[in-house]
Length: 461
Image 1 (cartoon, rainbow, N blue to C red):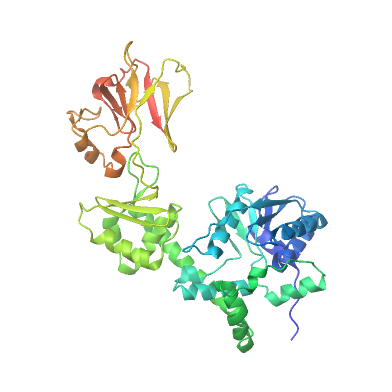
Image 2 (image 1 turned 45 degrees about the vertical axis):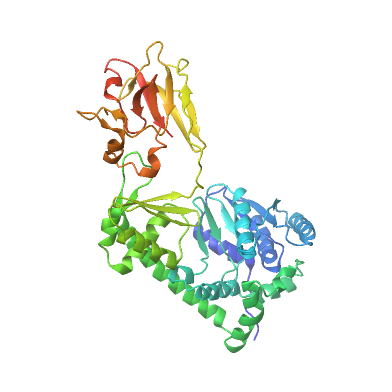
């Protein structure tokens, strides 16, 4: 039976019309030079002639894994000239090792390289097709994934926080693409690694899917419908999570991101706990845990005693419990080097809305302003040196400006809900040997500037 014909240009046209990007948006094509991306590049060249309001870029990622990589690069650069489309080549280093998946490492390096040339709002085009969708679905089944994983790939979806990913060929069969390339006499490369059955996708492509399609010719199309049904189910779950989750989040003072109230999470039905925890992790931009990791995390977080120290890590995400709140952060390898005390020269601080900046670690800096409003530190007297210190003894007695009486520092950390792992990194302002402020939390009562005096407003960024 003859395969239905298609136009890659019209496939692009349909999805771009659905997405409706603004003029000037850049369409970036992941261009390997294989038959799939060659056909899509051909269609993009035609689309570009019809739509000069957009910008276009082909990106060829040089993985350095094949002896033929230089030849592939030359092919892509030559074809780009024929298509009258600009091209850049990004060289990447693919991590390898006994416990590293070359497929996954190459994919991660490739997407990182592609995003490095994109600007917020740009659209990445990839040449994934219906047979790729079947492979993805089978791999998801092998891994025991739920509706989110079985939804496989979408035609239009977000990529990171700032980009879009569009797959114009997702409802097109591999045979249709190959037939189109042959009819148009499109030269393309052949990656020899595609014949290596040690890789899971190749094993499916070479040995499993041909058997499935010989028995059920429409299996790629029907499983694609199943993936869409899973996506629809996941969308309903996400909608319900989006409605329930905000009431369980707490915006604590001095924190950029909210924390999750574990008492409220524990009050949910068991089936919803995992979905809500997953939604919380995803809402803060962290990688998703596996089903097993998620269940283990729930067990440890909800069954722990109130004063128990719970710390769970998966990939680059760290989950910590303090009291009945769950804190999320990016995992950082432990460093035994303490934060250094810093001297601060504020004698040159201008009387304007310009800050004196002091870098306290690679991620954080203090900004000193002269201010006339708000709770602020009085200006230092002649002879008073200004410094920033860390990790002072918990027995130090402090008197925050909002309290009637003073209290030991370790008690104040508890009172202000400062998690134990953050206490030694809170910057403390000193004049000579006297504590003046716990920056971001309080000013010492004796060092608050009078209402009619200029003072220091210190912000932690």
